[in-house]
Length: 263
Image (tube, rainbow, N blue to C red; front, top):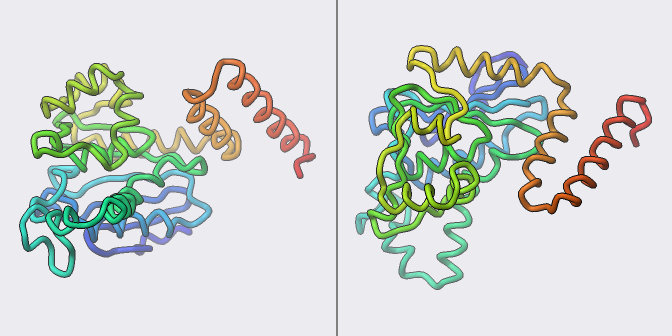
């Protein structure tokens, strides 16, 4: 597939596919790509709409900001047209609240699938839900003007869109706690130093840097990359000996495949 006609274009989300690379773009720059429930549903749909040929998914935001976080209209009694407000959600049972948040999280969970590598191209503000969306991706290439912040605690909330696990994995518990509890900004130099960013580039070079990284990731055979990603993702949850066994099993599959003996 080489056409750049959108596979999906709705509710502030556009998905295009060019050969093995898909691009998911947040398309509401006038509101700094603020997020709402409809956008989250569209992001989840984008994940379900990926053709099987896709190996790389690039996530980007139009305009000066990647995403300034949740649209504050969600906190008003009126909420969004045709949607419940957070006040409405709070009136539900524990099970109803849990189900609603689980649905919201679907927009943030598919980026780490083992059959793709996801890259967030981040410029300007990536705040709250925007920070968590960048954290949902495997890799982050950021512009020098990037401003990460986790502001949920300042609103009396917690980060609940899957961002806490990758944040702790990347920067450690103590720094993650300090970032979340203070809500302070993390800028490019610190992001690169602590592992939040894989690469920092001038803003005008962001797209080119992501293209170069995508090309490098596509150079290796897909199955070898997928097996390696699965090994690395599972490493933290395995003991040393369990990881050794997982490596042996994965290599056995690769050897059989290369020898033409795979099932």
